[in-house]
Image (cartoon, rainbow, N blue to C red):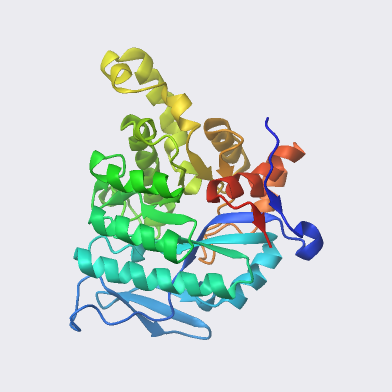
Length: 350
């Protein structure tokens, strides 16, 4: 294993924190009126709730009640210290991607959320970096906002959905966007959004997050491999939330299909198991055995902490989970911070 040259300045001596969390979200405390001033289907708003909470409302229906840790830097820093997290990569709550909005309105929403993330980064005492949102329903506008996020706001990359209005990210229509991300050295973090298969679930609404999200992420990761995305853009750094979702279970079938079906073998640039180790994944799987499997699939240099902070369905002790799953000290450090710093292209954390 190559020596990791990334560093966290201060580290444990500063606050007992060493972890780098690549999967944590921001929601603004308020949203502007939609373009044109009238109602716009899919445009979010906020209403106050009890204590330090507010409810995101979409199409006059409550979507999610959230705490002010979504937009108050001090709250996040307190929670990070408790969990041993030194650095958070801040990204939009997925429902704020706005892919279902008209493109210009989606662009306006992305700009607003990205500006809020930039303000939090500025308030964060060096402990936040930005992963912005882009309106991928229009690739040209998405490229424009990607450039603004990286070149003007100083973000380390962007977060995108596992699908864009049903189009999977491995589709060639998105190649110009990924080409620009590679050229800018921007990290791309893939999160589930409005997943397929909701009609197959039996039970309450939270099953979307519990079951449908990882399914959609797994299919998105598979599409990157079967679409040969990294053949075209080998320098692209792309990561998948929720441990890559179902991908770890899909990979053996994909590998066997590569061996059995000539059409599949002819269409791929390399075996799927080799391509998988060019991707990144987070650690958000809630299970030691599954985490070890994720590391086996993606490789010890490609798995990073992800918590889904500050939402309720999150991992409150990611460093503890890593410590329980692995004995090797060097591997623990890679999973805790080294791999994430490489993914984010961060050399040093204050």
